[in-house]
Length: 317
Image 1 (cartoon, helix red, strand yellow):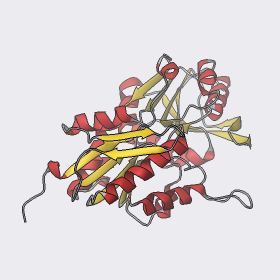
Image 2 (cartoon, rainbow, N blue to C red):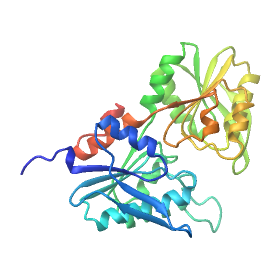
Image 3 (cartoon, rainbow, N blue to C red):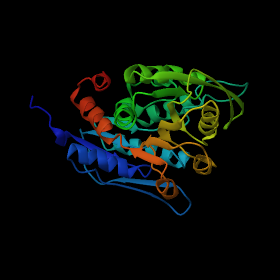
Image 4 (cartoon, rainbow, N blue to C red):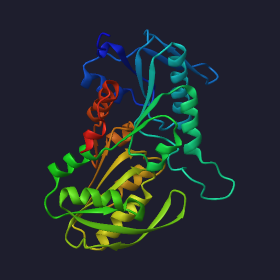
């Protein structure tokens, strides 16, 4: 049998993050597949695939970010269109997986939304998922198809090593992020601290105390996402009160909803570095405090390794 070449797969993009999709194609030195993703006058999503994908492997790049439901439906319909066009394999590349925070029952009579979204994507026809820094690792088990959960750590570590010295302390903004912060601190040979956070309501947080030494240190808060920035800015304020010399932050997913930008602008944060799993709005891009690091090369390597059957895990060793 003849060996398969790069011409045997296509990369397509929905409307959520076309710039990232284009960077991935540029990294792989290949054109992006043609797809019309539009809406009817009543808001229904309309999909038309313009390239022949019969017997091809296709990768659909689509973050389920704001507006979450619109982008989720776009993804589902693109998967269905590929399936009905006789694509050989359909991989949903979801740099940011929306609904990931609803991964368990936290009260009676509530849905496990992350599981429902996984079922929808699988039923639509996806045969593999590539995503990044899932809010909860167990979400991989919600799928009955293979899932590659990538980590932004290589990109973030390169940034940290290039911009910070030996007096750095990595800070987890809550107890749930301690494992991630400890892993970064170990690889950077940096100190570790934890902010004790008490959450009073969804999207509202109150930081209470700091566990660890941050006196006269440059500290870097590490989190998987920043949504309304309540946790982040409260943590920054407490760290400054405890004597930190500077407070910086890194995250993978810049959700930045509601009052996030105002809170960040008025906080004691010096910088917030994030990746492009979610595209920033113009007002966010204009903020000097925000620095955007691209994960396009990382995702592109995962795509090509997935296509060739090579190890994806080796990217993070």
